[in-house]
Amino acid sequence: MDNSSKDRFPTTFANNSNLENRGSSYDYLDNSTNRKKQLNNDLYTPLIEHQIRQRSGLTVIGAVRSYISTIIGAGIVSLPYVILKAGYLFGIFLHITVIMILMFVTHLLLKARQNLGLESFGEIAYICLGRPSIFIINFVITAATSLIVTMYALLFSKICVSFAQSLFGDTSNSDNPFEQMITMRFFYVILLYIILMPFVLKKNFKELKLTSILLIVGVISMLLIFFAKANFKSYFINENDKKVDIYQKGSIVDSIFIVLTAYGYILNYYPIFSQLEVKTNKNGYLSPLLAMIFCFITYLSFSYFAMETYGEYLNPNIFENIQVESNIPSYFIRLIFLAIFICNIPFIFLPGKECLLMSIDEGRNKTISKQIERRIEILKGDNQSHNKSKNDEDLNGALISQRVSNTIYYSQSVGLFTLQLLLAVLIEDITIIFGFFAALSDSTTNFILPGLFYIISFRVAGKQPHTLTLIASYLWVLAGLSLFFFANYNNIRKITTSAI
Image (cartoon, rainbow, N blue to C red; front, top):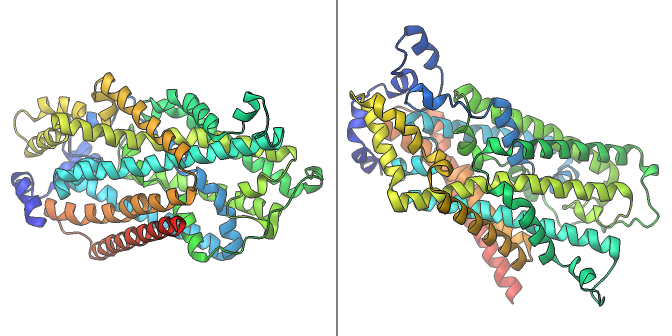
């Protein structure tokens, strides 16, 4: 693997013994010493600065909103149970540990980007693992994001059905077609499809600004309602409210996986980073960290209010507690959760859509291969580098949505979203989706790929990595492989057991 990687790009790194320093300060437009010194502190691709400072890119606050919109989703419904099962001390420790783990993954991805001058999973995989990996990695990410979208659509439809049943009762024996329809999951999946279609067709995160703001407003509103429920219980109790049975099957292991899933943003790290207006090491670390701090405060506040409200009756899925209530706040909470799901889906859908388009474009035009060859020529510093770099942004794999034809873009986007929601109609058991998502997403994007990218990118660039980080990267890959096989084993066992 080491030799083959170097053979693909022998002259690039052989002619640049100090690639990191050169790549960080190389600017065809401004050769001043002060400017080079300033740019040398930033982590970005070794191209001219117009690629790094995009005129219509995301600000840091915009990136933070995008990360928050990626992170906060279905995982929030299980977080209060983590505190119930693990206790406040160990529960808070789990949250902080997961944040530190994901910041380490962010460090690995930024280092790989710095070494190779590329900023998408598919591009970096090409240099590290060869051209076939472009299709493999992009397929894995598309499949993982599709499972999340399917899971959200499934949850959305079930919540809507429970909402309708609490309002209209059991309509299965009704002769009215409308009454029968409003308690069918299929109806709500179609409704979600119609609502979200304009949003899933957006081409970048900046176009989703309003969606991210609505999600944050929804989260804050939910916290305020739970605060009222926890502190003014007598005002929100209905005599028809019921309590679920005490759940006794949970474990600490469940808590660990719940928290890890609840903070997941790595699938969207490169897509969001590539759209930053100013791509620096500071912004690369700061934006996801600020997003996770916001989510940390939100998650703990939500967990505390839920614990105060339901106590020992708190279920791993808080909807089990909410759907048996008939008080007014419970209806508002359900509506807010539905709004959060709606706002979260476009942010999950976008990276999967881009990976699908990137695979199609590479198969048709070998665009990623040509792009990397062009960047190599820029790194060599030939006389035509400046002219070529002007067009290089058009070949950036992270800008695939802007590059492909509208026919391909819209047909593939609509087709992918249709397939995802069709699966939501066909699948009933949400735990199967969670299992396959853990196998595909958590193992590959949180562990295996970041570790491999870090290790191989240093070999390809001919640099010496930090010893402890290198050891941790190897352990990271082993942990990812273990998670992959363990999760798939559980999935197969669950399917075969249910079949019997």
